[in-house]
Length: 555
Image (tube, rainbow, N blue to C red; front, side):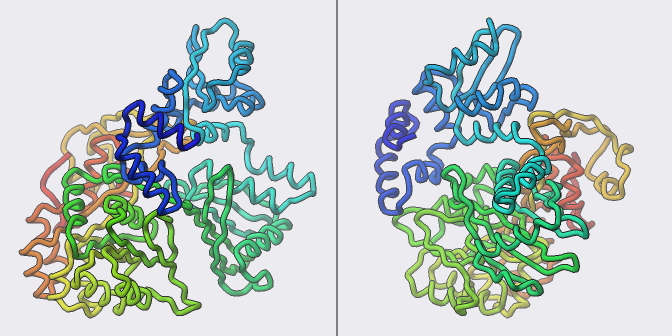
């Protein structure tokens, strides 16, 4: 929708104020962005609110296809040709009434065409966002291998067409990674969806070399190199959306294995409550980012959502009055209004050297993609000490372990105690699919696996938990989407005094526990109780804590 029309709708329906629009226009001009980008980034509107506002402008209801997608059978009742011609999706069907969703409700020929399909049933037209309509169109897609066979039979542009089908499916499945794994007779293609790998299809091995060469050419990598690792990046553009793809190639005994990491061109960001943070944890973070200097550390393994959490904090404070500069490897989320630097070892632009230069650039806030070495840690701590607010990630198993590790890297205890504000550990768990979620009553005796048995200390008697029934909306996994579980250690005066004594992990956690900290498992247990995730998923990601970490409360 044109920006001017969208602004008029949002103002007329009173979703935003004229002052909000003015600021958004100023921001869009300065940062070559859009009014929508600013309003979304500031949390003044959400995509659903945009959908509702546009629906109201057409005087029709809004259909949230993302939260309530129709099942496969229902959607396919509208033939593919008609669905794509009019951009229409069958949302609901009742004995005497049919509800259809479209992003172009003012088409004169649409209703007569649909009336032929549904006879005397009353037609209700609803509005849905274009991206959600397009996502439902994936139901018309045949299995990857069926499409592979048709492309190969044509013997035309095999490699480009195969790659396009794979990219399109990965986007439709919201995959974070695409894996090409060569085997003796074929190449296995797998997608990582919600943190778990799923088989997507297989490619005949005789076509893999052309696919591999195309990826290398688009990524500016050497096509004549087959026995060394290579890293690069490319951009994939589809329907006005740009996806940045990070490439990693390694030689295996069966051929070169490729992993493509899918990164959004621009991140709209999340609000703190979208991340899965409790109200208390949200207040702790808001308080920390409101300070003029200090350091916030987020720890966890690769793929645990650390960068997303940091960029959510950036989103809170991002404004024209603040100079925010980042140094990352790679830059995963391009963000309007933020100066982002990509580490480049070929030009000797390392974290440490880049960080030294950033400090001379008059920054207010510095985001460091990762503290990897002693030099980077030392510069980061000194930057926080000299009046900068520093965000960074750090690899540690939990929040308490991060402090001794930093001390082991040579950071003076008094410097760490003076600068650190909060340490956060996090993991991602899959969320139960809303379409097929149901409650189940269980008893401790139902727990069979050793991990579940060890978790039984947190339960007593019968408990009510939730599970996914495995439907089309979640592709029969029982899960759809992810959320995070957290472990927080706030650096209080008592904790600062303890840091001065170079404490062990156990000593840090003992004090943190008395000050109200809880483990990843305990935070996840609250999400199990609320029906957000399952106990099995929680234990897969964050097993029950050891004795010294245990809390006495039960389910």
